[in-house]
Image (cartoon, rainbow, N blue to C red; front, side, top):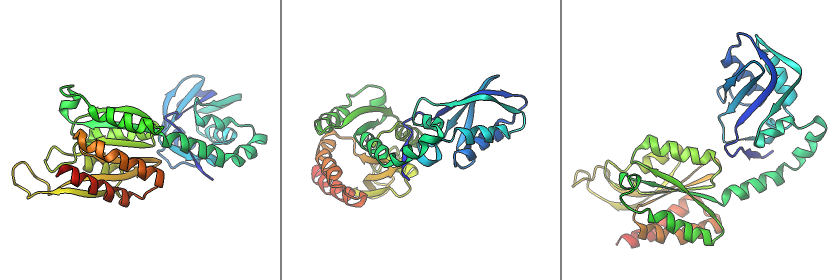
Length: 290
């Protein structure tokens, strides 16, 4: 059974409940259990006299864990001490999670169409591209971000929807946070530009390795550590993935981004593996750097 992308619509409202001295951690754990999620994957964002709001901390879920689960979710919540569920209680969501309320006699039909739903969502997500530029000079607006324009022009002509993923400082936490947020928002490709060098300030590859420990890297240039500002031996590009999102780490110079774009389009069309794509990027970018 396929997973479905939540596309940043991860809140679930349960209306028609009354709370009196409820342990919110237990409440969240009960909701997670009803949706076949691990404890900690759900937390309570709002709890009032007549409703409670949950947030699911996952970018996607198995459709079978969502569809038609309203009764199971309400029953699980009713077992939490201090919470009572009215006879007309209901579950709502603005996104994919809304299928929790699917009537029992429609569940089988929804599941039978799961492959079609999955294919459509994957197709939609795969065409969404976000470009993240790194470096204080970009954040401060001291230089024009020509890389976003290049990616937009090349990939836009090929039918992709390209969005500015924002500019971030050369900081691992900032880069990780931005990339994972874009993953949760349903971008099928996240391209970072800059921060792949051998200086201490260059932290993009390290940040993406935290997002994907299996990130494939390829060397563009090698330096003697301690020579000049070089504290790392290599300039590297990276290719990896998180959930449905392809991660691409490219150098900052626009000439190199221009050289990489045709390779990326060919890779997407031919469905290259990460290692082969990283190898082809490196071949082209080494020539570009020379």
